[in-house]
Image 1 (tube, helix red, strand yellow):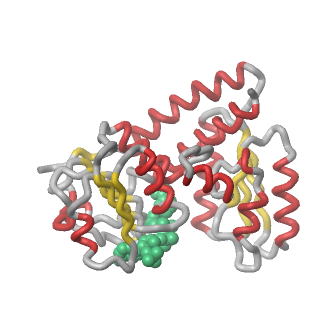
Image 2 (cartoon, helix red, strand yellow; image 1 turned 120 degrees about the vertical axis):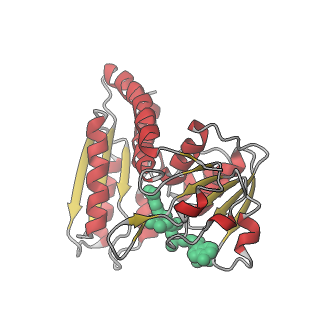
Length: 283
Ligand code: NDP
């Protein structure tokens, strides 16, 4: 079997076009959705992510503000900046690029963002809403992974979904979203005994570990849908996922490549959450 390759770039374009229609409808009513992205410090990878987020907003005609603060910014100054954005009616979504420097308490920062502007979905209130099935802002990366499954025609209800990884930004919310769609969900971690026994039973396998090519073809059920969230830089500078694409694609029914799979979806769903926040604010 050779898997269908899930083209994240093409699906991201399709989803962006759908949200542009909604953004344009708001603009016709005089509301321009606005996103503020705050970055503290000079982390090169974070700077690239922030640049891409601002670019995606421009592409859809959204207003965006890019606030770059020095690495030694006191926590109180960052919190005051967030409070000002919470009160700014031109801003519907606020995102603080993580990680923040060590002297800043990231939990405090995430809690300072107004829940109705928390487009990353990391505020405890929005996490709680996700857990209870009343999702307000689905965290962008798992939201993007769910969209890839939906747009590829993968059935979720009644299937066994295995999520490898339990981070707050990917693994846990992904498992909850699959559960919400009536999958039977297993979560595996670094402490799981005999990981392959679980992954081989997955109709849908989502991998988010940050361990390059750790899932090989022999760990995959024939015909499974494989979503590879991992982004790893190899010594030769190339990117690869947490799944060994070459062996996995011979077994899986669907598979996402890295790059070009989940990656393009994350920013797309951030834009979607920002438009949604503006729609709610404009009601
Ligand atoms: P974390 O490091 O926060 O979490 C990794 C998870 O994987 C942990 O729960 C860990 O288990 C588990 N894990 C690690 N090794 C193994 C193993 N051998 N077997 C089973 N489970 C294991 O990572 P993130 O969730 O933040 O990110 C995961 C990957 O996704 C990274 O490559 C990251 O770059 C990528 N990513 C991609 C995004 C995108 O836009 N495409 C966005 C966000 C992340 P334990 O809890 O027991 O330690």
